[in-house]
Image 1 (cartoon, rainbow, N blue to C red):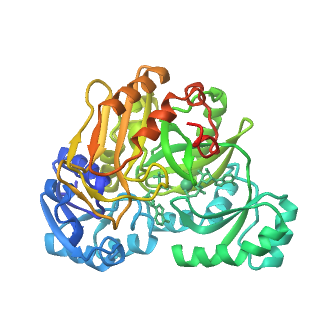
Image 2 (tube, rainbow, N blue to C red):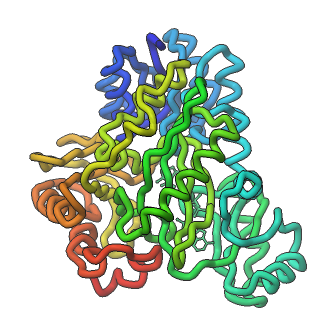
Image 3 (cartoon, rainbow, N blue to C red):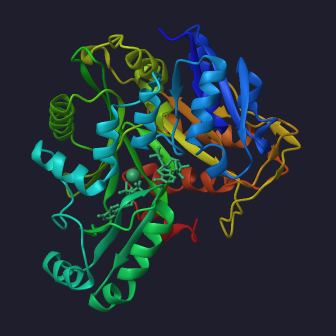
Length: 446
Ligand code: ADP
Ligand code: ADP
Ligand code: MG
């Protein structure tokens, strides 16, 4: 097992990873930008290294500074968390070329799944149903128009390297395709450094259902059931729950079997998530995230398995500590992403948290890095905290979430706590099975 791990991230996820390391008896190195000197992740780690100025490309995305920080501190492995360099295949390769361990999948798998076109092709070959769309990348506007009408408008024009809900546009007809093709390509280039685009059928009102998997280097591959992440705004998740309400059990079992046979065939190592659209009783693969996911805690709560701990131990070459038969979901878990944002404009907000009081009691988990007096910098993601509540069943979990949202106090910065209360209290959400369009269509009414 590793003696020392460098955590190449910030915020709540750096705190989360630090916890798993401490519980495994592993010493930790935090890295931080100048703006993050007083951040929680720096305070709780055993050591810390400043890796650069506030801008992410000079600090958290600075691969050379991260490798140097490992050398200075004698850290043997790097945990990338999510976002930043977590899905950067050349970084993963650079880490292993320096004799260090990247806590994540093999760089070949990161590379293959990072290209969404290739990912879909591979999954298709492995028998996983995918969202109908173009065979490969779309080279020019005339191909885009041709394929658009073959598939049938509306379609979704997507960046092959996209992520974080960005880099996609709904195209309703030929004119919109002509107007937007080069704009989407240009945006893809500036956001993701790659202007490759492809086309998918735009599926109207599906649900977002994803399957959590993990593999070790001893031939064990296990799924940890599914999560429903359909409550979204601008293709970004707002609330997630496990397991998904109202899906036929037989259908789920079939899906899990297909998923497991695919990752077995790949020889996948570590944690991963396969994301699907679920529409009229069928699943369609969209993409695979080759990393720890923001919403992993809801799976941890219902399965009682520490995913970060397993992620670290399998990266160290150990066997998974459980097998498929030991994964028995119990109860229902819901996560609310608490963001620092304006409730009307949704613009990210910054400021000093002058009062913070967390909710507590049975079934409550709050993954955060904030504290009273903490100054939220404006350079980074606006996720402040994840409220994770687990109850006997879905109804209980919703009640528990509502009472926790009433208890929590965050003063000094605006948050989306009120939005969460309205969603959880709504009749549609209580019924279950809302689609990915639901929140945007109902946000005014809520
Ligand atoms: P999850 O599926 O784990 O919820 P998200 O899509 O919400 O993942 O992304 C997690 C974090 O990583 C967010 O902060 C998001 O902005 C960021 N992120 C994900 N993919 C990319 C990417 N390709 N480029 C930039 N940021 C990304
Ligand atoms: P990202 O890498 O940004 O997470 P995804 O491909 O996972 O991109 O898509 C993000 C979200 O966009 C999905 O969760 C879903 O809500 C929506 N979406 C993606 N593809 C389609 C599609 N073909 N039809 C309808 N909605 C889609
Ligand atoms: Mg996605």
